[in-house]
Length: 192
Image 1 (cartoon, rainbow, N blue to C red):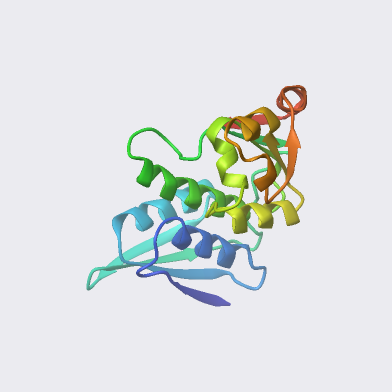
Image 2: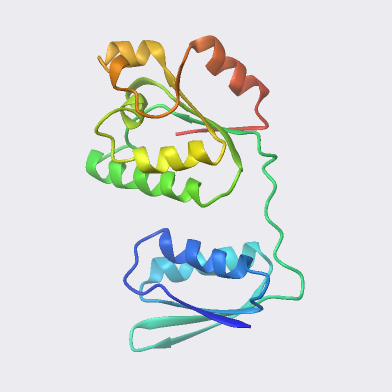
């Protein structure tokens, strides 16, 4: 069966996530992804190469049509062992403009919600604890990750420092021993 994914007008990472979901469907053997920007085209093309699939790209009226053909076997999902720990040490992602950093952090956390069961623990330190407390724009994504089985830990000392101890909305309070132990026993640690 062929499936069309019209991702025109959508921001990163939505086009690649929608395309990946379509490719993951067992009933689908061909996906036509339609995007309207170079970044989405490059992201989908990179994913297609990573999955060792074939694709053809055609440009029409400012849109890119990416026809992806799956083999009879479904693409293999990279196994991160389900023991990946993400250490979030700031309320923004990257250095530079904090507004952009906020947008990038929200996009990253949303992307993690689409990666079923690969994250064991998310640990929040320093200003990162602002993401797990009242008023955070990421609470929906973090609650979704927690509901999927990921443990959410916020540094108790950090919560106290920022006056947020009574405002924790998702996960539990951790200490430096727990944080160090999680990192030492993880298969992979990602530091943001």
